[in-house]
Image (cartoon, rainbow, N blue to C red; front, side):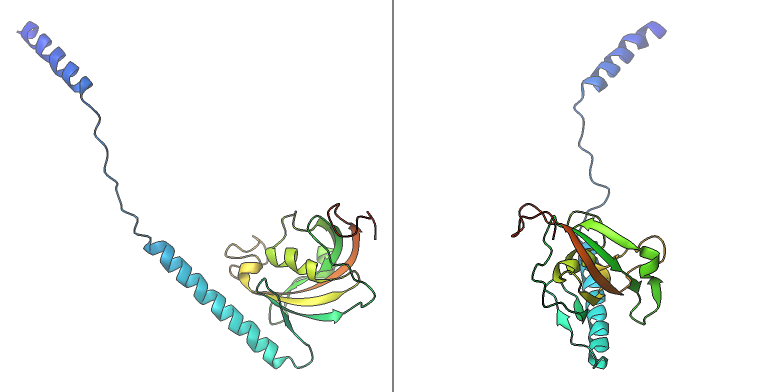
Length: 190
């Protein structure tokens, strides 16, 4: 009796093995609603942060604020009309900066951060700092108000800067150590 089932079993296995695979159906269908909701949430957050920054600017009658094309506001503390060169991508600059809340609570002091040497647009600092330094000439100092998207964003810095935190930073451009080869002035030291 077992002998009669063996050929039948072999035929069934052979038939099953030769069967074409069926395409699996997706478990869930992506509608894009999560992305749309996330975009709307981020737009709302940016509008709130911009209104917060605007209210600080309206209250501050001592300083003349400028708006950058990158989406933040700033004012100069020290200007130097004798300098004309603005850092460009690839220049190596020496800066000192701090990070504070909009309420002036210190997150990182300039002493804690120390003097920083970095190549403009080539190193991993927060986005606002990378572009803000290009607005300063050697010896100039300015305070910048950055929305969270130009600071440390949604993630924060895994230490003292929180999630979606708007920050204020005073940056001093101490020196331009090396100008990039493609900068307008090709000398290596200023």
